[in-house]
Image (cartoon, protein in one colour):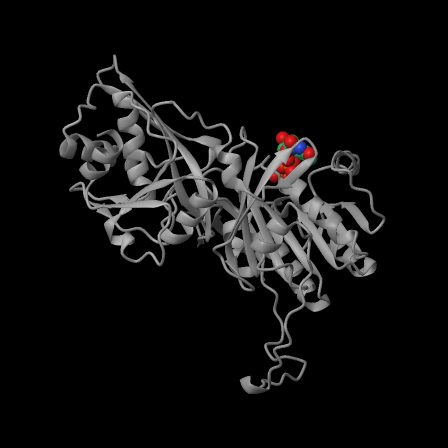
Length: 448
Ligand code: TYD
Ligand code: MG
């Protein structure tokens, strides 16, 4: 039965007629016409299936394949579960093709046949990248193809253990007439690939492009179809990349892996704090160090503020890596509670290294960085700061203070200001931890 449907390319909402605005996600002009074909088939299974009592199910520990990229293995929950389907999403140019080619080559060096399918690049381009990455292995196969049926055939005939499909938006099945990259194509192609992976115990990596807003026909729609969803993030102009698990049926979603894009591919960053602090000026006003958490991992980052008199009627508030609303809020608190005059000042904030900070635990650090630059007073380099700042200027307790303090200690910091609420729960004495209840107390200690 042939049916024409209009599908929102952002969220997958379907409508029998064209709509200017999607009632589900609110996107404008996002509907595209897609012809779908319903298969009519027998609703009864042809095979006998036997449900098992849960007590009779064997829990043989799932053997995992190690990629030898420890950052990646950790994000996956300790390696790849054979037969699992892993979606790797990220903006164009971030390094998805590089990462997947590197991980396949690691599997190939273990003697496993692996296949890299590209719908975007020619075999020569892939070979050039491989040369750059110093990859040469006869177990690594390359296929440049856009039609799903041919890809399935190749997977079947090669008896491969792992396949990368780069990217899902470029692959189409000839059973649907809509264009590659459209919602119905992406869904159908993924569905068929997943079926094959499960049936043949092939590990499947699906690469998907995500735009800056994070919503396009692709990764978001596929999250429920796959076992694991990893997002590759980072600023294009910075070399650091964060691989984050947002869904994992075989592990925790709190893990992140940190990589650096170098001349010869992605290199793991074993000690990120050291890296992010390596260029820190020790005697510059406006620079403050904060131990944040990336997943379960503590990470020391440098916050920088620049406050200077403004010549504009509306002074500028610019922040990179920090939510601008959070900054506006903290500026208002500083003005009201501490009587600082920031109304006539331009305020610029930056997180060094292109990292994003979304935790409220960084509030105290942000407030101190702004004040440090305003007063032109250096914050002594042995300090780190933790604490969420409330609207009345109170410093509120934050989560997992201990892991953050251990990391700060490891990196050689000597003193820490943190919420009183956290100090009483500390199991042992870390650094020189000073508990405060209010913003004023912290300022007294640092600048007093
Ligand atoms: P790529 O993996 O092609 O990104 P994606 O598949 O996510 O679109 O990588 C893109 C960038 O990485 C490109 O601008 C070049 C850079 N790069 C390096 O810096 N070093 C390398 O060894 C490689 C292979 C790429
Ligand atoms: Mg690519």
